[in-house]
Image (cartoon, rainbow, N blue to C red; front, side, top):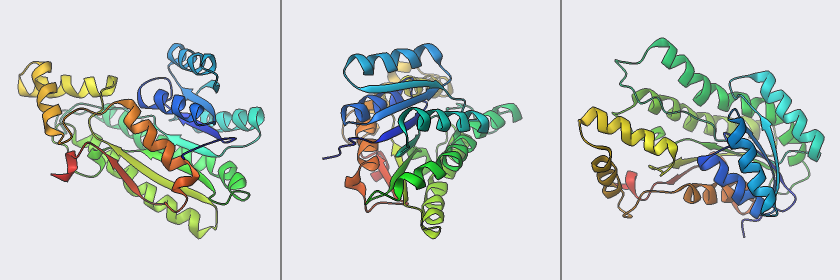
Length: 266
């Protein structure tokens, strides 16, 4: 179940957090993982950990806001491994500002990473994915990491919610676009709740500042807001991404998978 044997996956933002855990889980499921990020030291460390555990990992510099960087990444991946089966558009950033406080510089950076990065990754990787998809029963796969903030509103960071909502609908539109071209590329999005990663810690700090409370009280309250009784961890999301990338999800495209401990069920 959920095996990725012989597949080649490119993961953006793969140096740490959800991206790094996704790389580990995909490698354990049999994939060769190409990990792209701008965090050089963490990138090398993650790739080394995977290789030392017996997996196949290849690290490369990737600025998701740069089309030439994406082109270079795809060229390197296909040169090294001959094909590309999976793209995980994971790179993202959390602004942590009220819409009244954000500057144009904040907005441009947020959009560049969270929206343009997903579009560029999809656009540049699509030809290689389509080529591989021709010879696969279930085609190639793209998984876009959105958020529960891409489904429901977020009063703490409305602009983050705006960009993640864009990823949600872009996913559906891209799935339909590729289907219309008769390209065998499945495109799905995943929507994490609050995950205990560096970005999760950032959200706790922002919420604590806005509410004039200490971080631990905010963390505890956030945990209690999840009906399942705990915060998510990177593994929870990584395992779901592996499923969406695998042939077990072969009849899924344009779907939004929510992995949030029941947060948005309320």
